[in-house]
Length: 447
Image (cartoon, rainbow, N blue to C red; front, side):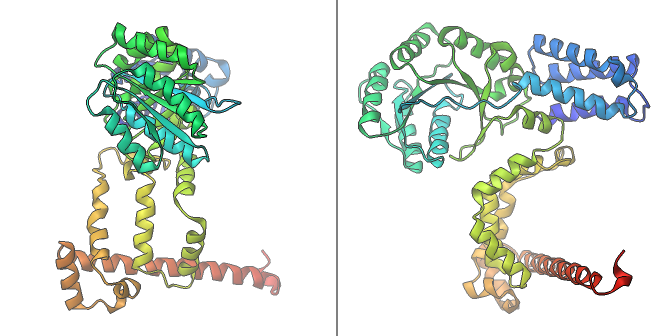
């Protein structure tokens, strides 16, 4: 996500490397590179022009020109402008004072609209709400069945009818929502391959009848300025409340994300990545700006970990590490928790400085599968006691996991090294505590 844009920003800032101050010459050079990076990322031309104009004006201020660290100061100026153009701050969806809350989902066919509808329901359910889905996409083949399948995965009811009447589906679903004591109704409307009058009229009529508390427009982030132009047309007809960026895990240049808020003057509220039902995030302009500039996003990483890692389980794991009883069964559990947090590339990009370092590295989520297969081919006793795994057992485990004996050997060797590292870290902690205690006894150590 935005890897190419991030690397081009980094290259642009290099013109300031080693400079003792910002001058009109290096400002012009850096701004020119930034404008080129934005246009290459398929950012709207007016947005790119406004962005670089504001950056140039801020950089030409006297307090910046006399700065002793021009590179850092310029990065801060670009960061502030990115935050502004991405929407300044997070905006939540509006919830009804008297339930049910009605949320209308619109977008083009293929934008990931139906998948997002189910993801949003899953997110709201995790927050303690009771959502219902309305299958008002009655034209696309298998759209209703797709929504039912996704809803079945998350345990959320769906209202649908046999007749191809989207307006009737939506209005009857609202009554069903109230009858079933659901507090949120999410309406998945029909998409088309392009914007047309029939689609616009239908969505507008549903909105007029339901009077939704929130209307969200799903944008395929991989389509760049085309997505922004479509969003503008939709906004003129249905006046939506917020934007959802879908497919951000794809090969996206970032044009839609950096243009849509400026063009339609509506905030981005959610990001959707991948097909898993928990692959949805609230959009934070400041965090996205940090990621674009290669600063990482530690807060989002911690939040994902908190959602997926059980505190009681973490405490038990910590105790095992301290007592040096951490085994392959525990290691497998940790792998499963990390996989639930999202793609490995996305997680690593949240660590400051990692985005640029990973640029040309092939990071494959399937790389963990052979390790998982090897551990699952062991008996429970072997997982708990890896030292018991002799030569014949290693051959059996390799055959059972479809790997080579050397792969089993490598895993066991690396696991043993990891255990020794954990033990040494624990011993260092004990040594530090001992030293702290001795300071209170021995005056020679009170320094």
